[in-house]
Length: 233
Figure 1 (cartoon, rainbow, N blue to C red):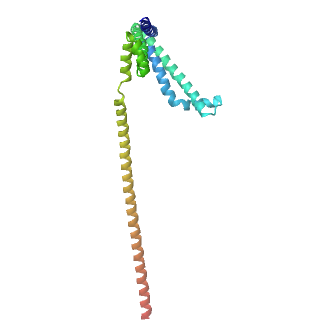
Figure 2 (cartoon, one colour; figure 1 turned 45 degrees about the vertical axis):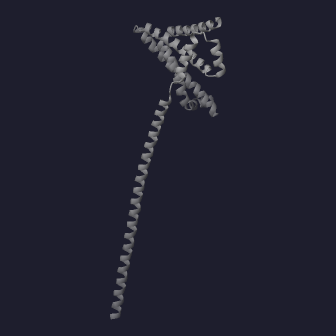
Figure 3 (cartoon, one colour; figure 1 turned 90 degrees about the horizontal axis):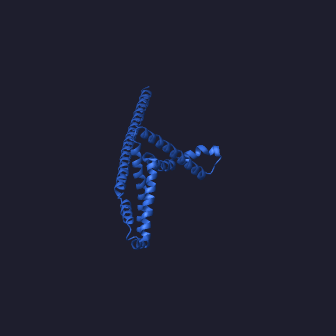
Protein backbone atom coordinates (compact mmCIF):
# COMPACT_ATOMS: atom_id res chain seq x y z
CA UNK A 1 0.00 0.00 0.00
CA UNK A 2 2.88 2.33 0.79
CA UNK A 3 4.47 1.72 -2.63
CA UNK A 4 1.18 2.42 -4.35
CA UNK A 5 0.70 5.63 -2.38
CA UNK A 6 4.26 6.59 -3.26
CA UNK A 7 3.50 6.00 -6.95
CA UNK A 8 0.47 8.28 -6.77
CA UNK A 9 2.46 10.94 -4.94
CA UNK A 10 5.31 10.80 -7.46
CA UNK A 11 2.97 11.16 -10.44
CA UNK A 12 1.06 14.01 -8.81
CA UNK A 13 4.24 15.83 -7.78
CA UNK A 14 5.78 15.55 -11.25
CA UNK A 15 2.53 16.74 -12.82
CA UNK A 16 2.28 19.70 -10.44
CA UNK A 17 5.96 20.56 -10.85
CA UNK A 18 5.72 20.72 -14.63
CA UNK A 19 2.42 22.52 -14.24
CA UNK A 20 4.17 25.17 -12.14
CA UNK A 21 6.87 25.34 -14.77
CA UNK A 22 4.14 26.06 -17.29
CA UNK A 23 2.72 28.66 -14.92
CA UNK A 24 6.01 30.56 -14.79
CA UNK A 25 6.62 30.20 -18.52
CA UNK A 26 3.06 31.02 -19.47
CA UNK A 27 0.64 29.36 -21.85
CA UNK A 28 1.91 31.25 -24.89
CA UNK A 29 5.51 30.17 -24.41
CA UNK A 30 4.45 26.57 -23.70
CA UNK A 31 2.38 26.38 -26.88
CA UNK A 32 5.02 28.07 -29.01
CA UNK A 33 7.70 25.76 -27.60
CA UNK A 34 5.63 22.72 -28.58
CA UNK A 35 4.79 24.16 -31.98
CA UNK A 36 8.45 25.07 -32.44
CA UNK A 37 9.56 21.46 -32.01
CA UNK A 38 6.82 20.00 -34.20
CA UNK A 39 7.16 22.71 -36.83
CA UNK A 40 10.95 22.48 -36.84
CA UNK A 41 10.88 18.74 -37.50
CA UNK A 42 8.15 19.15 -40.12
CA UNK A 43 10.00 21.86 -42.03
CA UNK A 44 13.48 20.38 -41.59
CA UNK A 45 12.42 17.01 -42.96
CA UNK A 46 11.44 18.74 -46.19
CA UNK A 47 14.20 21.31 -46.71
CA UNK A 48 17.15 19.59 -45.06
CA UNK A 49 18.87 18.64 -48.32
CA UNK A 50 18.43 22.11 -49.84
CA UNK A 51 19.80 23.77 -46.70
CA UNK A 52 22.66 21.28 -46.67
CA UNK A 53 23.49 22.14 -50.27
CA UNK A 54 23.80 25.80 -49.28
CA UNK A 55 26.27 25.18 -46.44
CA UNK A 56 28.11 22.28 -48.11
CA UNK A 57 30.53 24.50 -50.09
CA UNK A 58 31.37 26.45 -46.93
CA UNK A 59 32.09 23.30 -44.92
CA UNK A 60 33.67 21.47 -47.89
CA UNK A 61 31.34 18.47 -47.53
CA UNK A 62 30.65 16.10 -50.42
CA UNK A 63 28.85 13.17 -48.79
CA UNK A 64 25.11 13.50 -49.48
CA UNK A 65 24.06 11.85 -46.20
CA UNK A 66 26.24 14.21 -44.18
CA UNK A 67 24.94 17.18 -46.15
CA UNK A 68 21.34 16.17 -45.43
CA UNK A 69 22.07 15.57 -41.72
CA UNK A 70 23.73 18.96 -41.27
CA UNK A 71 20.93 20.62 -43.22
CA UNK A 72 18.37 18.93 -40.96
CA UNK A 73 20.11 20.07 -37.77
CA UNK A 74 20.48 23.64 -39.01
CA UNK A 75 16.85 23.73 -40.14
CA UNK A 76 15.55 22.39 -36.82
CA UNK A 77 17.55 24.89 -34.79
CA UNK A 78 16.63 27.82 -37.05
CA UNK A 79 12.89 27.11 -37.16
CA UNK A 80 12.69 26.34 -33.44
CA UNK A 81 14.57 29.56 -32.60
CA UNK A 82 12.28 31.66 -34.80
CA UNK A 83 9.13 30.17 -33.26
CA UNK A 84 10.60 30.47 -29.75
CA UNK A 85 11.38 34.17 -30.24
CA UNK A 86 7.89 34.69 -31.66
CA UNK A 87 6.47 33.05 -28.53
CA UNK A 88 8.45 35.40 -26.30
CA UNK A 89 7.22 38.44 -28.23
CA UNK A 90 3.58 37.32 -28.10
CA UNK A 91 3.94 36.55 -24.38
CA UNK A 92 5.33 40.06 -23.79
CA UNK A 93 2.36 41.54 -25.62
CA UNK A 94 -0.01 39.55 -23.40
CA UNK A 95 1.82 40.74 -20.29
CA UNK A 96 1.69 44.39 -21.37
CA UNK A 97 -2.00 44.08 -22.19
CA UNK A 98 -2.81 42.93 -18.66
CA UNK A 99 -3.51 39.32 -19.67
CA UNK A 100 -0.33 37.96 -18.10
CA UNK A 101 -2.20 36.28 -15.22
CA UNK A 102 -4.55 34.49 -17.60
CA UNK A 103 -1.56 33.44 -19.69
CA UNK A 104 0.13 31.96 -16.61
CA UNK A 105 -3.01 30.14 -15.43
CA UNK A 106 -3.49 28.55 -18.82
CA UNK A 107 0.22 27.73 -18.79
CA UNK A 108 -0.26 25.87 -15.50
CA UNK A 109 -3.13 23.82 -16.93
CA UNK A 110 -1.33 23.18 -20.21
CA UNK A 111 1.93 22.11 -18.55
CA UNK A 112 0.17 19.74 -16.15
CA UNK A 113 -2.09 18.31 -18.85
CA UNK A 114 0.83 17.74 -21.21
CA UNK A 115 2.82 15.60 -18.78
CA UNK A 116 -0.32 13.80 -17.58
CA UNK A 117 -1.17 12.84 -21.15
CA UNK A 118 2.37 11.55 -21.66
CA UNK A 119 2.12 9.41 -18.52
CA UNK A 120 -1.31 8.19 -19.67
CA UNK A 121 -0.06 7.06 -23.06
CA UNK A 122 2.93 5.27 -21.49
CA UNK A 123 0.72 3.53 -18.91
CA UNK A 124 -1.82 2.48 -21.54
CA UNK A 125 0.92 1.19 -23.85
CA UNK A 126 2.42 -0.91 -21.05
CA UNK A 127 -1.02 -2.16 -20.02
CA UNK A 128 -1.63 -3.45 -23.53
CA UNK A 129 1.23 -5.95 -23.00
CA UNK A 130 0.02 -9.08 -21.21
CA UNK A 131 2.97 -9.42 -18.84
CA UNK A 132 2.75 -5.77 -17.75
CA UNK A 133 -1.03 -5.94 -17.50
CA UNK A 134 -0.92 -8.69 -14.90
CA UNK A 135 1.68 -6.82 -12.88
CA UNK A 136 -0.30 -3.55 -13.04
CA UNK A 137 -3.54 -5.27 -12.05
CA UNK A 138 -1.87 -6.91 -9.07
CA UNK A 139 0.32 -4.08 -7.80
CA UNK A 140 -1.74 -1.01 -8.67
CA UNK A 141 -5.28 -2.22 -7.96
CA UNK A 142 -5.60 0.24 -5.04
CA UNK A 143 -3.96 3.14 -6.86
CA UNK A 144 -5.99 6.31 -7.28
CA UNK A 145 -4.00 7.71 -10.20
CA UNK A 146 -3.43 4.57 -12.29
CA UNK A 147 -7.08 4.03 -13.34
CA UNK A 148 -7.23 7.63 -14.58
CA UNK A 149 -3.97 7.21 -16.46
CA UNK A 150 -5.24 4.04 -18.12
CA UNK A 151 -8.64 5.48 -19.05
CA UNK A 152 -7.17 8.67 -20.54
CA UNK A 153 -4.40 6.79 -22.32
CA UNK A 154 -6.85 4.24 -23.72
CA UNK A 155 -9.07 7.05 -24.98
CA UNK A 156 -6.14 8.75 -26.72
CA UNK A 157 -4.77 5.58 -28.27
CA UNK A 158 -8.20 4.47 -29.46
CA UNK A 159 -9.04 7.71 -31.23
CA UNK A 160 -10.45 6.62 -34.57
CA UNK A 161 -8.22 8.02 -37.26
CA UNK A 162 -9.86 5.93 -39.97
CA UNK A 163 -12.26 8.78 -40.77
CA UNK A 164 -9.34 11.08 -41.48
CA UNK A 165 -7.58 8.35 -43.42
CA UNK A 166 -10.72 7.54 -45.41
CA UNK A 167 -11.22 11.21 -46.20
CA UNK A 168 -7.64 11.46 -47.36
CA UNK A 169 -8.05 8.30 -49.43
CA UNK A 170 -11.27 9.66 -50.95
CA UNK A 171 -9.55 12.95 -51.75
CA UNK A 172 -6.63 11.14 -53.34
CA UNK A 173 -8.95 8.86 -55.31
CA UNK A 174 -11.00 11.84 -56.46
CA UNK A 175 -7.86 13.65 -57.58
CA UNK A 176 -6.64 10.56 -59.42
CA UNK A 177 -10.02 10.13 -61.11
CA UNK A 178 -10.04 13.77 -62.17
CA UNK A 179 -6.54 13.39 -63.59
CA UNK A 180 -7.61 10.22 -65.40
CA UNK A 181 -10.65 11.99 -66.86
CA UNK A 182 -8.49 14.88 -68.03
CA UNK A 183 -6.01 12.44 -69.56
CA UNK A 184 -8.87 10.67 -71.34
CA UNK A 185 -10.20 13.95 -72.71
CA UNK A 186 -6.73 14.89 -73.93
CA UNK A 187 -6.33 11.47 -75.55
CA UNK A 188 -9.71 11.70 -77.27
CA UNK A 189 -8.88 15.20 -78.49
CA UNK A 190 -5.53 13.96 -79.77
CA UNK A 191 -7.22 11.05 -81.55
CA UNK A 192 -9.74 13.38 -83.16
CA UNK A 193 -7.01 15.74 -84.32
CA UNK A 194 -4.98 12.80 -85.57
CA UNK A 195 -8.03 11.44 -87.42
CA UNK A 196 -8.66 14.81 -89.00
CA UNK A 197 -5.05 15.03 -90.05
CA UNK A 198 -5.23 11.54 -91.57
CA UNK A 199 -8.48 12.42 -93.33
CA UNK A 200 -6.97 15.61 -94.67
CA UNK A 201 -3.93 13.65 -95.84
CA UNK A 202 -6.12 11.13 -97.66
CA UNK A 203 -8.08 13.91 -99.32
CA UNK A 204 -4.86 15.63 -100.39
CA UNK A 205 -3.51 12.38 -101.83
CA UNK A 206 -6.74 11.76 -103.73
CA UNK A 207 -6.73 15.31 -105.04
CA UNK A 208 -3.11 14.98 -106.20
CA UNK A 209 -3.85 11.63 -107.86
CA UNK A 210 -6.84 13.11 -109.68
CA UNK A 211 -4.74 16.07 -110.76
CA UNK A 212 -2.07 13.73 -112.15
CA UNK A 213 -4.75 11.71 -113.91
CA UNK A 214 -6.20 14.84 -115.46
CA UNK A 215 -2.78 16.00 -116.58
CA UNK A 216 -2.13 12.58 -118.08
CA UNK A 217 -5.44 12.68 -119.94
CA UNK A 218 -4.69 16.14 -121.30
CA UNK A 219 -1.25 15.00 -122.42
CA UNK A 220 -2.67 11.93 -124.17
CA UNK A 221 -5.29 14.07 -125.92
CA UNK A 222 -2.59 16.46 -127.08
CA UNK A 223 -0.50 13.59 -128.47
CA UNK A 224 -3.54 12.20 -130.30
CA UNK A 225 -4.23 15.58 -131.83
CA UNK A 226 -0.63 15.83 -133.03
CA UNK A 227 -0.77 12.34 -134.55
CA UNK A 228 -4.04 13.13 -136.30
CA UNK A 229 -2.54 16.27 -137.82
CA UNK A 230 0.44 14.28 -139.12
CA UNK A 231 -1.83 11.67 -140.68
CA UNK A 232 -3.84 14.32 -142.47
CA UNK A 233 -0.65 15.80 -143.92
